[in-house]
Amino acid sequence: MSLLNSLSKTTTKSKKRVGRGYGSGVGGHTSGRGMKGQKSRTGANIPLWFEGGQLPLIKRLPMLRGKGRFKVVRPTAEITLSELERMSADTITRETLVLENVIDPAFKKAKVIASGTIKRRVTLSGIKVSDGARSAITAAGGSVE
Image (cartoon, rainbow, N blue to C red; front, top):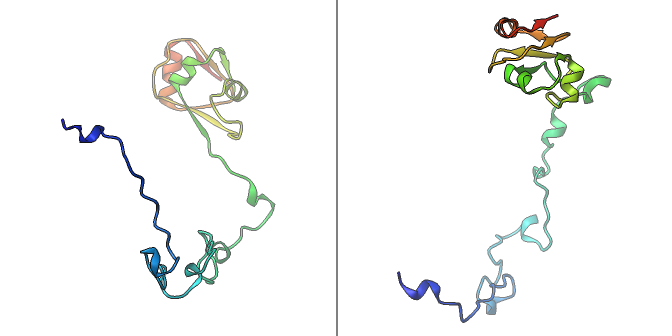
């Protein structure tokens, strides 16, 4: 390995100043900005959504009607058997799922799917259960109401 990589720098090169005349060494007239237009001027700050005066996309799309257009509709939350195994409660409802941070409070429905294993006895009430999960829960000694 050569020692050239370990040598420290002895000089610093200053950044080239663009747009300061022909004597600056970089661009005299337009300084790489093109001929005319908004981006060639000083202080040009164009937002990302600007489309050059064309009607913007957000205004072209139709508005949703009614009061519920701001509500986020969440589908049913899926809970695996391994998540039920980690919970401390024996009787599991939607409220206990929210309290133990298994699902988000925005979910209004929940369904247990057969993914993972469960070995302890749990009682499910008010929660939908798939057929495979139902058989796994009853095999472990639990029940579904």
